[in-house]
Every structure is written in structure tokens, then in C-alpha cells.
Image 1 (tube, each protein chain N blue to C red):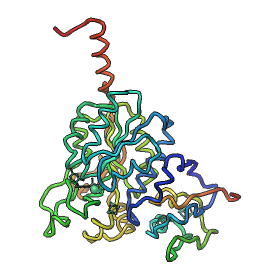
Image 2 (image 1 turned 30 degrees about the vertical axis):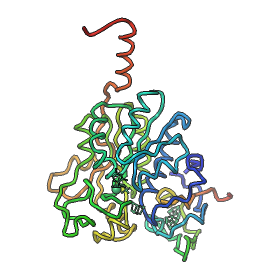
Image 3 (image 1 turned 135 degrees about the vertical axis):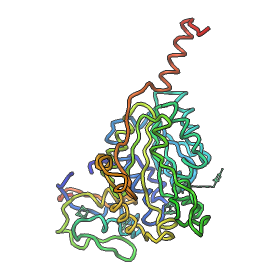
Length: 67
Length: 275
Ligand SMILES: Cc1ncc(C[n+]2csc(CCOP(=O)(O)OP(=O)(O)O)c2C)c(N)n1
Ligand code: SF4
Ligand code: SF4
Ligand code: SF4
Ligand SMILES: [Mg+2]
């Protein structure tokens, strides 16, 4: 499990606001906006990749901090 | 995850048309990550699917693909593999496509132990056509065709594939993408018929109708009902009630069909006969 980075909204236009990423996140990072997911508390992100692997729409990606 | 999934998706076909929260996208994502980890050659791989929401998977994948008639993905796959055994042949199918109209092909492909990997998207319903019951809809559940509760029993598809002769059988779930990636990777690398059932949520035509709820509730349901096979094996029958085992359920090594067929060709060419 890579824990080297933090979540990034890589493909915002593909988000269907289903909330699965929030369901599988072990901490509080993401929030649903009206039309797409939003990163509300990036500082909490532990880079676990649960959201990246669970998102059915390939919206999220954990990237290295400097990317 | 260190995988460039863009390499495996047809960018001009994205975003996909699956409903918000549909588990099919998670299975598709697990498949491309598993494929990347398998080290197989993308150029030597054919993905074949039938009809259904799950059947749309091949159209999103940047491989040589065939999108064929309902229920017949395995027949086309058998033809492709027989014509060119060098190719990696993968079938993506649904519980309706693969277990109802295509159920016969599933048992016979298993019986032959032909080197094909099947990923069956089991959402317990005919999603695409609006929620008719499938052979995977549990007894008692509501579908548009069972408004008073389904009186049929559902299959245990993994048991069916195993008893029909499949040499790799496993079950994954959209709530556990990491385990699903590992499972699909192992299935891809298995020589012989590999059957992988993936549990995936259809919030629109199954979850809401059966009081499980939307996508998030359906994932919680999975969390409460999935048990790793090693643990499941040790449980009493009463304890197992209502639970579903996951992981590699069965794997053996047996002679593969196209190898056997090549052997026949070699023997005939060498002038041998059975007479
Ligand atoms: C020969 C034939 N019969 C029936 C249909 C209608 N049909 C289209 S998809 C489908 C069922 C799909 O269910 P499943 O395979 O479970 O896929 P899902 O949509 O649930 O992913 C049916 C019956 C068809 N297209 N062709
Ligand atoms: S899981 Fe994906 S599609 Fe669903 S809300 Fe999160 S980012 Fe959007
Ligand atoms: S990487 Fe893990 S901690 Fe960070 S947002 Fe995704 S699920 Fe939450
Ligand atoms: S109908 Fe069901 S299976 Fe089909 S895309 Fe929608 S949620 Fe997925
Ligand atoms: Mg289905």
C-alpha cells in the first residue's frame, strides 16, 4: 500500500457524485459538492488509495505531494 | 496506485455511461490494474463481451475487443482462442449474459478447461433492461418480474464452474478492490479456464428495489456479508448462513484444451491415427 502521497481530483468532469469515495475513506477528507467531489481536508489524507481504487469513474488519484 | 490506467481505457469513449454508484466501474478499474500487474502483453490480448450494462465493458477497453450477441461471449472467445492460442482471451459478462442466456456456454467452456479468463459482473439482476430477475437474484427478492418475491433459487456460480471443470475459481467484490485486483491478476496468469465472479452493485435496479439502498448502503451490505474463504471453510453451516466467501476458492492444474488440440494435430501430421 503506497502511503507516499495525497489524493488529487484527477478527472473532475467524470465525477457522478455517488459518494462511494467518502464511504471508503478512513478519515475525513472528501465532501460532495453539487456537481462533483471536493477535497475539503487534504491535511487529513493518509494516501491509502481506498478512494482511488473504489471510485467507479476513475476520478481520484493519489499522487506524490509535489505533483 | 502506480498504474497508468489511461493506457488501458479508450479515452474517446469516457466517461462511461454507467449510472452513478454502479459497481461495474470499480470492476473495470480493478481489471485494468490487475492486467497491468500481470505483465501480459496488451497487444496480444482480446477482450470479448456480450450484451448488458456489464457487456459495455469491452467498449471502454483499449485492447482488441469484440462486443457480441447476448450470451455468446464465450463462444466467440472459444473461436478466437482456438484460431490463435497465442492470444490472451478475456471474457467480460453479466449474471444474465453469462448465467442465463449464456449459462450453457459457461458450463461447457469450464468442462473443456480452455485457457480463457472470465470476469462475470454479478449484480443479481438484469440491469440494462430495467431490473428483471436473473439466475443470480436471491430467492424472495423483488424484481420487475417478481413483484411478489422471487420463487426461484439462485445459482452458486463458483460451485457451478468448479463442478463443470473450471481449474481456477474465485470470487471478488467491489467493496474490496485490492483483493479483487489480486484475484483477477491470478486468474489472468492461470493456464486453463479461470472463472472469476465479481459482486457489483446495481443501485438503480436492484439495491433500491430490495431495501438495501443506494450505492453506499450496498457497499456496507457487502462489508457485513463477505468472508475470506479460509475463514469461511472453518465455519459451521449455521454460521455460514447468509455469508459469502471471497478469494481464490479453487485452483488445480490440468491439461488445457488448445494444447490437447495441438497434440491431436501433431499426431495426425505425424501419420498416427486412432484406428
Ligand atoms: C437475444 C437477446 N435476448 C434478450 C436481450 C435483452 N437483454 C439485453 S441485456 C439483458 C440482460 C443483461 O443482464 P446482465 O447480463 O446481468 O447485465 P447487467 O446489465 O446487469 O450488467 C437482456 C435480457 C438481448 N439483447 N438479446
Ligand atoms: S467515488 Fe468517484 S464518482 Fe463517486 S463521488 Fe467519489 S469521485 Fe465522484
Ligand atoms: S487516499 Fe485514503 S485517506 Fe486520502 S482521501 Fe482517499 S481514501 Fe481518504
Ligand atoms: S442499471 Fe444498474 S448495472 Fe446498469 S449502469 Fe445502472 S446501476 Fe449499473
Ligand atoms: Mg446483471
